[in-house]
Amino acid sequence: MGRPVRQLPAEDTLPRLLLTLTAVCGEYPSAHLKHLPGGASYIESMVTTLKQKGLLRTYYRDGLRGLRLTTAAKRLLLNHQPERFTPYLTGCSETNRLKSEVPRRLRLHRMAEVLVAMYNAGVLVFSWEKPSVFQPVPPPSACRISQPAYYNSREMKEMGCQADKISSSRSTGVLLTDGGIFIAYNTGPYQMKWEYKAEMRLKVTLQTELCRCRLPSQYMDTPISGIVFASDMGRLDTMVGADSSPSNDRFLQDGSFEHFYFLTCDHNGEAVLRLLCDGELRAALDDILSEDLQPPDPGLPIENDAIAGNIPVLFGYTCDMPRLRRFDNALSIHEKDGLVICFDFQEEAYRRCCGPHVQLQCLDLEACERSVFPSPEKKL
Image 1: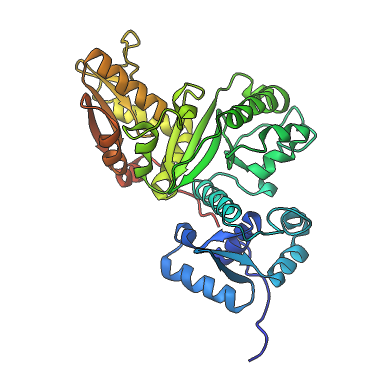
Image 2: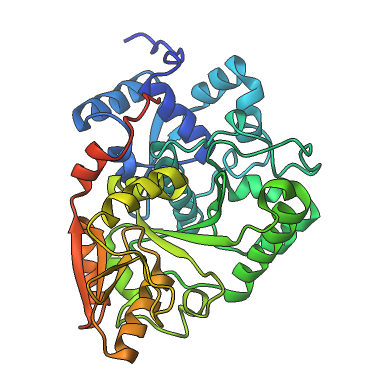
């Protein structure tokens, strides 16, 4: 047999996207291939073809399987677009000098999962398509985040000496939207062991760097929220339900973050992420939900988004964990029933986490996507 023909797939194709993601992430988790845009059979065929052409290889060790670029693929990407791939594929960068230790590889996989979720939700994830915010020199005063952009933890650490303060954080990165700052985490199928002081240092550093130094005109008075991704809704129990441990989840429960959202690393989580990124889209959904309800009552000792008769209603579809817990606790204290509106895929987890005073009303996510969400632009 002759040597495989080694040339890059065309721009704006799924094979090119996978090579790009693998370059940026260092190692792409094989189990997460199903979350790429495209059908399962096509994705399987695409990966096989890229391997046959000598552009991708499987790295399997200690029960962990991932995809890595071949030397030939790195050379092609560097020759074709050096301005894009030099930071990832040269020198001592984490994505170039790959390690075999399981904790390091799991970290790469967790970061890749969040990156793909952001990408699928329409967020800018590649360094060459978004403003340079975390370079050592602050961006010009006119710089503004007009489209949601995600900066992974490696990009955040480019800010200079301030990066030393956040080196031990478990965050995968930060999502910036027109009106919000969200620190992102990924617990996967495991229970995350938070390092409280490290995460508080990250929050304070971002408040200083983003809100006061780098983008003060946009974020001066913007509170910082959190997002934690997980493999499935079952992980919610360990964070806000009866199984939660105050010693382990102090970071979530002590009010350090008024809003901390729980999302799954799948299409369901990506749909909620789109709502978090788009205030107008969220307001449109809230308007629909409010049509048969009375306006919220700010005088109630229970925070609410609307009133149904004499029952407080919480729009809980974003899975804001502190808010959900405050609502549940307040209902218990005042021995009053309340209604939480959530998506259908959240129902089972909410029933396990909430007390007997919480009633649930479920929205069909697919129906909401058809009626409320704008048609997504083709993105590869």
